Image (tube, rainbow, N blue to C red):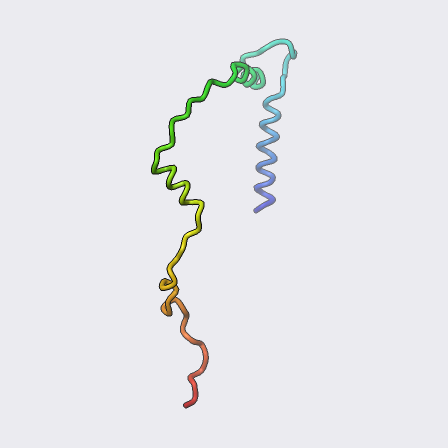
Length: 91
């Protein structure tokens, strides 16, 4: 299964890289060339980001998620242990 996934990833990466190769003169641009279209999208620069503030509940949840869950000792009671597999004790 691992080998199959690796081959699929390799095939997809090869297809992606092969699609971005120029098939015309390097100084010309063509509307049907994937490399030219991708370069045209990237040339505009990144817009300024103005992220919204994190809501208080999300910030508290992310803070508490970093700590381990503490289970009370009573939760590890006898009902969790399996039945004994030993023969009955001789009296």
